[in-house]
Image 1 (cartoon, rainbow, N blue to C red):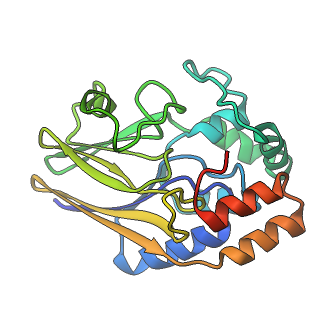
Image 2 (tube, helix red, strand yellow):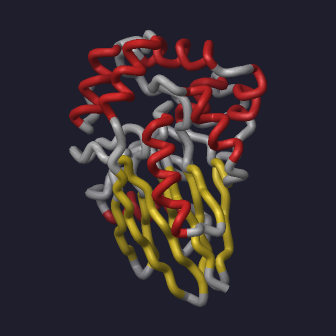
Length: 242
């Protein structure tokens, strides 16, 4: 059996980018959507993003943002990443989410595994230890291999770094779909991936989708998103601004 999985990550409250990505993925008829965390926080549309994702009936993994919004209660290994404006973004998003939305985000699983025929896929937001460590594609091979943890997986799919890549290590694949709402690779287009797995085969397609980022910046200004100049620079420059 071959399974087609649409992989999206790091939406960060950008409903405009999310709609563009879902529109690009729908004609490819994925069997399932997998969302690798960081849904609502640090963007102008937290409520809309959460409700859209809840409506997908997707497999959704808990990310740094979900831990932060939940106060990381009961989630060992979480340490709050320190950067300017983090608390402002967190407070702003929390005010716009319903109690039911916040409860749903707090209960998302830390990781998950899918068996697609003979191919085992492991999903996590950042790494098997926590939702915060940054593991880039240029990390040494030992650190990259550690992403497999004890999963026994043929492929690990993770988000968090906002940079799409595929790397093979010892016949096993590391896949990052990049970010839907805040790419950090210098390309403003939203990023996602389509995986075909089964019968001992693994296919990976990275998809870049243009969206109206100026509309997102305008929404952020109109709605009073904090640290708006920094947010604007991040969206327009497609780089981490701190």
